[in-house]
Image (tube, rainbow, N blue to C red; front, side, top):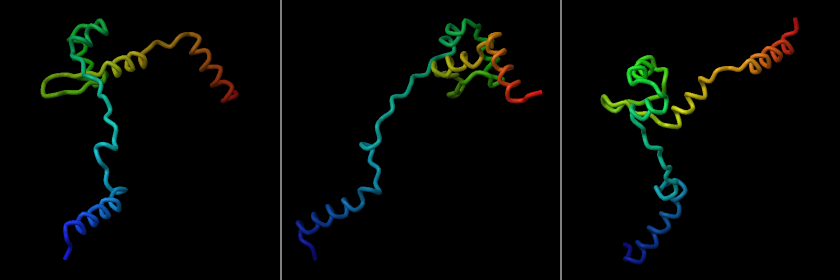
Length: 106
């Protein structure tokens, strides 16, 4: 059938033809994952008691993950959650009201 050289050439040709269909781990860049922070760290960031944060997790108000009984948080998600909850200023409300009135003329 084939000698060693023929098999080698055949394997190389097959590898070239299959390359577009194969995804190797080298072609996908590794994404550095953000480390999780603990309930204690979240408590310090938010300046809240642990019981309050437990309440938020129970109501699914705050972004979190569970690993067994341990609560895990991402610092970036906690800061995004804080930004979502910022109070609307009087100026922001006036701008929204003006935009609404322009869009929906009385």
